[in-house]
Image (cartoon, rainbow, N blue to C red; front, side):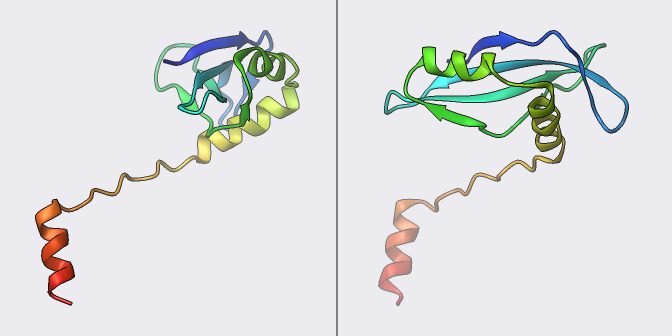
Length: 106
């Protein structure tokens, strides 16, 4: 489950002139590490922009420390990554019976 770890005071203005509120978020991974990313919230609602994973840290406290040290320049870069982020499509596996058939057909 994702958690908001840190909210930033200065607004970050995108190349389109929209001023976003930024907040660092994170969640625990299966191996116990924590991943962190930045969310950018537009002022009047609308689509929230998410950066890709920005870091992986060994524990929530380490992730909060990372988030608390980010500078406005870093946040501007993260906003650029969030704006240009292309979702990675999920690859669906064929049913097991089809995979077996494909193997037998070789």
